[in-house]
Image 1: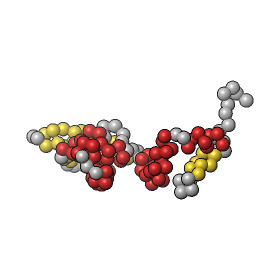
Image 2: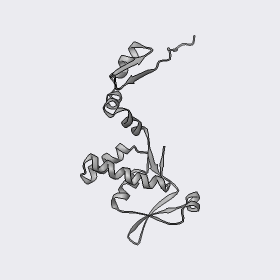
Image 3: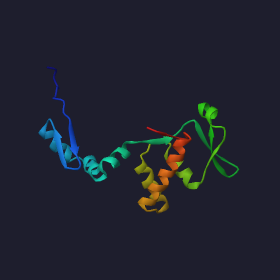
Image 4: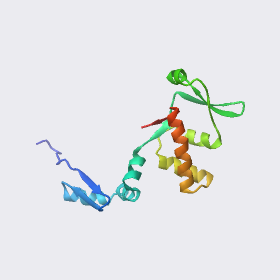
Length: 143
Protein backbone atom coordinates (compact mmCIF):
# COMPACT_ATOMS: atom_id res chain seq x y z
CA UNK A 1 0.00 0.00 0.00
CA UNK A 2 1.40 3.42 -1.01
CA UNK A 3 2.16 5.99 1.62
CA UNK A 4 -0.67 8.49 2.03
CA UNK A 5 -3.41 6.05 1.04
CA UNK A 6 -6.75 6.68 2.68
CA UNK A 7 -9.92 4.68 2.31
CA UNK A 8 -12.20 6.25 -0.34
CA UNK A 9 -15.08 7.91 1.42
CA UNK A 10 -18.47 9.09 0.28
CA UNK A 11 -21.22 10.73 2.27
CA UNK A 12 -24.69 11.80 1.31
CA UNK A 13 -27.30 13.73 3.18
CA UNK A 14 -30.97 12.94 2.98
CA UNK A 15 -32.34 16.46 3.38
CA UNK A 16 -35.87 15.27 4.07
CA UNK A 17 -34.71 13.06 6.91
CA UNK A 18 -31.95 15.42 8.02
CA UNK A 19 -29.50 12.56 8.23
CA UNK A 20 -26.10 11.94 6.68
CA UNK A 21 -24.97 8.49 5.59
CA UNK A 22 -21.31 7.68 5.03
CA UNK A 23 -18.94 4.75 4.88
CA UNK A 24 -16.86 6.72 7.42
CA UNK A 25 -18.48 7.88 10.64
CA UNK A 26 -15.85 10.59 11.18
CA UNK A 27 -16.33 11.98 7.67
CA UNK A 28 -20.10 11.92 8.02
CA UNK A 29 -19.84 13.97 11.21
CA UNK A 30 -17.26 16.35 9.67
CA UNK A 31 -19.32 17.07 6.58
CA UNK A 32 -22.34 18.16 8.63
CA UNK A 33 -20.23 20.92 10.20
CA UNK A 34 -19.19 22.44 6.87
CA UNK A 35 -20.64 25.84 6.01
CA UNK A 36 -21.54 24.80 2.46
CA UNK A 37 -23.49 21.82 3.79
CA UNK A 38 -25.42 24.04 6.20
CA UNK A 39 -26.23 26.37 3.31
CA UNK A 40 -27.23 23.43 1.08
CA UNK A 41 -29.65 22.19 3.74
CA UNK A 42 -31.25 25.64 3.74
CA UNK A 43 -31.59 25.64 -0.06
CA UNK A 44 -33.10 22.18 -0.37
CA UNK A 45 -32.42 19.82 -3.28
CA UNK A 46 -33.88 22.03 -6.03
CA UNK A 47 -32.10 25.12 -4.74
CA UNK A 48 -28.80 23.28 -4.46
CA UNK A 49 -29.11 21.90 -7.98
CA UNK A 50 -29.93 25.39 -9.27
CA UNK A 51 -26.90 26.80 -7.44
CA UNK A 52 -24.61 24.41 -9.32
CA UNK A 53 -25.75 25.71 -12.72
CA UNK A 54 -23.54 28.50 -14.01
CA UNK A 55 -24.26 31.08 -16.67
CA UNK A 56 -21.96 33.30 -18.67
CA UNK A 57 -22.11 35.64 -21.62
CA UNK A 58 -21.50 33.96 -24.96
CA UNK A 59 -18.07 35.30 -26.00
CA UNK A 60 -19.21 35.33 -29.64
CA UNK A 61 -21.38 38.35 -28.83
CA UNK A 62 -19.54 41.63 -28.57
CA UNK A 63 -21.01 44.35 -26.39
CA UNK A 64 -20.86 47.88 -27.83
CA UNK A 65 -22.46 51.27 -27.25
CA UNK A 66 -23.66 52.53 -30.64
CA UNK A 67 -25.44 55.87 -30.97
CA UNK A 68 -26.40 55.76 -27.30
CA UNK A 69 -27.77 52.20 -27.52
CA UNK A 70 -26.27 49.13 -25.84
CA UNK A 71 -26.07 46.30 -28.35
CA UNK A 72 -24.68 42.80 -28.66
CA UNK A 73 -23.15 42.09 -32.05
CA UNK A 74 -22.76 38.46 -33.12
CA UNK A 75 -19.37 37.28 -34.36
CA UNK A 76 -17.94 33.95 -35.46
CA UNK A 77 -20.46 31.11 -35.59
CA UNK A 78 -23.04 33.26 -33.83
CA UNK A 79 -23.04 35.66 -36.80
CA UNK A 80 -23.95 32.75 -39.09
CA UNK A 81 -26.86 31.71 -36.86
CA UNK A 82 -28.17 35.10 -35.72
CA UNK A 83 -28.68 37.75 -38.36
CA UNK A 84 -29.38 40.77 -36.24
CA UNK A 85 -28.45 42.65 -33.13
CA UNK A 86 -29.57 42.27 -29.55
CA UNK A 87 -30.09 45.34 -27.43
CA UNK A 88 -29.85 45.77 -23.68
CA UNK A 89 -31.24 48.37 -21.32
CA UNK A 90 -29.22 49.64 -18.35
CA UNK A 91 -30.14 46.71 -16.09
CA UNK A 92 -29.47 44.28 -18.95
CA UNK A 93 -25.99 45.79 -19.31
CA UNK A 94 -25.48 45.37 -15.56
CA UNK A 95 -26.28 41.64 -15.82
CA UNK A 96 -24.30 41.23 -19.04
CA UNK A 97 -21.20 42.65 -17.37
CA UNK A 98 -21.64 40.26 -14.44
CA UNK A 99 -21.88 37.42 -16.95
CA UNK A 100 -18.33 38.19 -18.08
CA UNK A 101 -17.49 35.34 -15.73
CA UNK A 102 -19.58 32.35 -14.73
CA UNK A 103 -22.30 33.11 -12.18
CA UNK A 104 -25.17 31.24 -10.60
CA UNK A 105 -28.77 32.44 -10.68
CA UNK A 106 -28.45 33.24 -7.00
CA UNK A 107 -25.31 35.35 -7.50
CA UNK A 108 -26.95 37.28 -10.31
CA UNK A 109 -30.18 37.78 -8.37
CA UNK A 110 -28.37 38.99 -5.26
CA UNK A 111 -26.26 41.44 -7.23
CA UNK A 112 -29.28 42.82 -9.11
CA UNK A 113 -31.28 43.07 -5.91
CA UNK A 114 -28.51 44.94 -4.10
CA UNK A 115 -27.82 47.30 -7.00
CA UNK A 116 -31.46 48.21 -7.59
CA UNK A 117 -32.89 47.65 -4.07
CA UNK A 118 -35.27 44.88 -5.16
CA UNK A 119 -36.86 42.13 -3.12
CA UNK A 120 -35.28 38.71 -3.51
CA UNK A 121 -38.43 37.49 -5.25
CA UNK A 122 -38.44 40.37 -7.77
CA UNK A 123 -34.73 40.14 -8.59
CA UNK A 124 -34.90 36.35 -9.02
CA UNK A 125 -37.96 36.60 -11.27
CA UNK A 126 -36.34 39.30 -13.42
CA UNK A 127 -33.00 37.47 -13.72
CA UNK A 128 -34.76 34.22 -14.67
CA UNK A 129 -36.66 36.02 -17.46
CA UNK A 130 -33.42 37.64 -18.70
CA UNK A 131 -31.58 34.30 -18.66
CA UNK A 132 -34.41 32.41 -20.38
CA UNK A 133 -34.49 34.73 -23.37
CA UNK A 134 -30.69 34.98 -23.48
CA UNK A 135 -30.40 31.19 -23.42
CA UNK A 136 -33.04 30.75 -26.12
CA UNK A 137 -31.01 32.96 -28.49
CA UNK A 138 -27.65 31.59 -27.29
CA UNK A 139 -26.57 35.03 -26.06
CA UNK A 140 -25.94 33.31 -22.73
CA UNK A 141 -24.35 29.92 -22.16
CA UNK A 142 -25.37 27.53 -19.37
CA UNK A 143 -22.68 25.32 -17.80
